[in-house]
Length: 305
Ligand code: R5P
Image 1 (cartoon, rainbow, N blue to C red):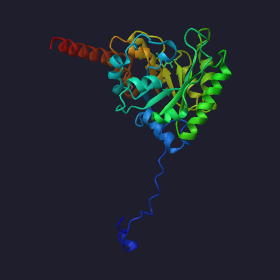
Image 2: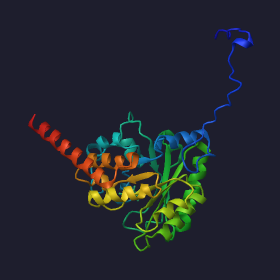
Image 3: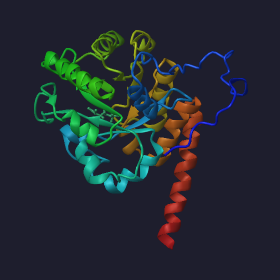
């Protein structure tokens, strides 16, 4: 039984009556009115000091099988995970391959259906929100195909996922998916990102465009994270990330430009430098080269031992 509070004359207790109650605000765009659990999950994904994130996307297998670089996630990707701020993946990879002792926030892929052999916009929700809770995820995510053949279905998938997540305090990240024949310009991404945010997404993942990306971030009332896209030479990928951050992105969610790099660990560190320390592309490339050389030396030494 707890002991009784020490009885003191009220003049000896300190209620700091003259100091207004501190009501913590929240650092993330568009999240001020969310409940505590939502904010706490978002604060695991986005670093509260920088307001940004480096998310590692490794969910490609959900529609394209063992993508180059992801053939053996246990061998090649698990060692990179501690360097990421958050991981975007499927429940299959999470349960089979990711050590449960890893405490990185999980952004769980929740849509699926068609493979690369079929019409990709014909997705359904592919995870029960209860399973997301069981897996202790920090956010759920899915593709939204604005302008795609099954546009309405994918938007409806998103609104259902948002509703399920809201009931349980789990934020939703919408990914603006671009079909092969679709235009990739600022006008399209303004439309797609804004629709996702208006209909309830808490984070939007979208592609960088060289012209007018700042209008995409400015007109979207929730944080935007930049998708990486196909593999580019390292300096180009670092420049794209730097441009996106300088033009208002709250981080990146990159896959192939990290795990298909010659030195994925070095690339993770270089991208983190751009995102969290505002390293310029050339400075980040220097960091990449330094870490790459160090890692090569270490692995040579291991080979000789
Ligand atoms: C693609 O549909 C998946 O959502 C991927 O996670 C992601 O968008 C691709 O990542 P990246 O383009 O950087 O390889």
